[in-house]
Length: 160
Length: 153
Image (cartoon, rainbow over all chains, first blue to last red):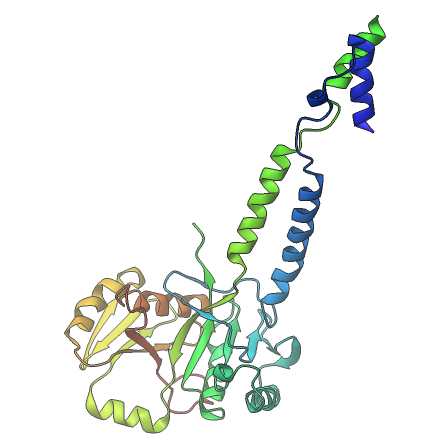
């Protein structure tokens, strides 16, 4: 479309035949842009899906955390209302019943681990707005009932 | 004539300059590619089991950091207690830990009303004492309360 206007413009003004290199001097970047945009959209869609478990908006932020590869271990979370989540499933307020249900799900995940390194591990996400009292029962349960010796507590990164 | 001029100027650059757009999009793409390998950010807390704990207590007197609801910190080392302000925790702990030749373990305990963000910050401060080449040198361990169902000691 624009190319024809371009050529006609030259014809009208100059009245001369356009030189070969005047017709199109630059590379056609449209396919490149298409591909890049599609890639970008794919990444934008996939990235949030990769963060596993219930999303907890304000994880406490740290500087000296360790970064480990995802071993597909079970992810449990406590949101700021104090509700317990296993992955994306809401189990209700933290009490004996919800903890037992979580324990069963964790056991099932460990018994058929998608990644052998993930067996015996739990990743715990807890909102920074909670108090220690609200999270402590979960830590004790994991230790006493599930015999987890070291619990991984989720943190965010301090952004400067 | 006037029309000619109009056609001329229009013919020079009818398309939008997309180069800056490509620049921006490419940079965004690179940012996403870099952040892509999903890593889980975590601080690990050791929770000693009953048997381990007894062994631990028998061999060495543990360093215990207790955060009060007022966010004042009580530091206990070999039976000596001292009160520390939260920002000074790392500087106070450093010489104590350097004396320890065996495994460097700091037990942490918190009062009920301590915010979870403060719990993690305290652990972060303790972990900051590990040398860079071995970030898991100093271990943080949870001090279990005698009765887990009890709210506080």
